[in-house]
Length: 321
Image (cartoon, rainbow, N blue to C red; front, side, top):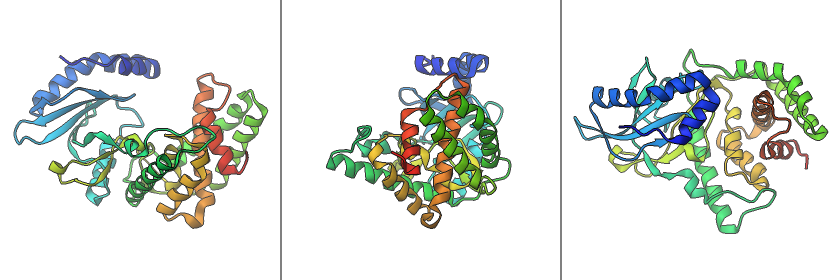
């Protein structure tokens, strides 16, 4: 029997409606099917995020530890196996694909050390508007440095054909920007979001062609396992891939484990890791694109204010306090 976590059920029902309910209803059958078809036995408690159920397993044929990932396939997740295989072929530091079923989107992935996310290095969140203690700050900066190294390896790979594109995403967000700005209740936030949109328009004509992860934050990087030959390596997982400019990748590392006083330092460290020191204006505009994208989505859900952390990231990058 597969117990479906209540939190996964709630998020699927809330965000995916009828498709989410159908996915949840099908999960026990899907799990049983692939445990049998792929010769797997369970090897630990189920894990989950907002989108997927992950079962630690062992391949009975050779004893290889793995992870069975079951998720609803949508425009964000459909390219995951394509991206992971492209990164794998390039030795770029992403989790390995051991099996994939195109009909359901089920993935059999290399097992990582789920007890050692990069967020553990950071030592927890900072104080909004303030700074960390010296020891915590050093740990957090080390985590940012590691994330930058992982990001640079991923972004060095050209995007395979057929993935969604940053160009399309930018076109949609700019078309929705005037309405999103108008629906914000606070005048200062309206000006701030309008400034984000203006910055994005300046770079919209060159969306880029790199393979992007889109969601590379500190919990989406885990330590590799020695039994997989990954001892000492930090490995990326759970991409929502698209083709575009690496500057669009920085926002999650600024927002996750948010610390207002570290926004500019993190931005500078990440642009340096990507070799974008001379093109920080473009990286800034594409980071502001993520603020705009999130605002468009939030306003579409009925919100009338920016997320406080997102607004502060925009202020810091635009030089506004």
